[in-house]
Length: 451
Image (spheres, helix red, strand yellow):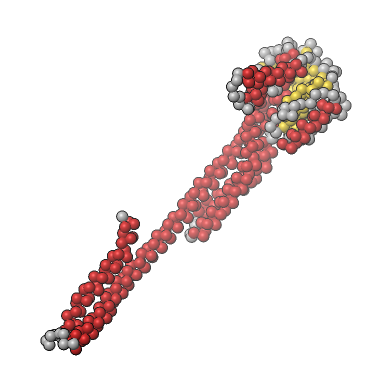
């Protein structure tokens, strides 16, 4: 029946593509993928009793590619059809065993199940190397041993199967099943989950089992944020202390060199914080996403308390929620430290800019003083130049007057000395006017640009 579900999902996707192409319209290249994604991981029906062994492995891109090759080799070894090259889900029928293989963004899951020897819960603790044999290139992050049985074989003492202090028992699936787990690792290495059915259909049994496996898997993945918190806590403490020291020293800055030194220290802190945030940003985001999935799965199974046992939600509120809150607080701490660094850097940069503006103002004042001195000097030189030029011009006039006098051109009463004396004020006036016109023409382009 599970093979039939997978085939129906694939057929539906293919039919959708054919129907769309028959419309004669231009189809988006990703339309078939988008429509098929809703049916990419169908629920598999379970015929009770059933024992399930679920494994989740952390796989990066290279490990995921190697894992795909490994599962294709496993299928070939057992004479089953391999998954499609781009498939992220596949169901294998290996006779007495079924295998559900799924690839996710950063992990891959193998879910082995069988009805053989499934009447007594957890009687077969470890099938690896015996009944089933496989290896994944990734590192194991979650392992679950789930038994789904009929309530007619009622377990009288759950304390024999689970740790009493962390035992959670709930009614689920509209009171048609009882679920028990302690979220602890048994001596073999599995987390045990027991589902006792009082009226589950094969489809609802498959859905409930899948939800419980997802709760344990995503619960484990969500807690990967805690090691990240521990790895950055010491660095955050150091950066906060150093930032407080730099902030205190800003008020004691006496010169621009000290400000530059403090600014370099702030830049070093900011670079270290950015590197740390880049290392943890994805992990903290994934932690929140996984925790949201856990809560959504708990809502879907519709848990209800039974007897004096703790519910899974209550257990997570006491044990899981504080860990998620710690990750959120650490991420908020990084963000707040980044904002403080930005404000402190801006404050210090403002002080440096103020000092630079003061230096520029003093420099401009000094330049203005020198310009005024140069102007006075220029005016003095211009005065001397007028006198010198006038002297030489008057001298030329004198030579001219002497020549005219020798040629008897000048009247007897007007001698060269009189001509030179009369020419002095006129020459001075002409030279002065000429110098002023030259100065006006020199400064005219600046005046034109200003206007």
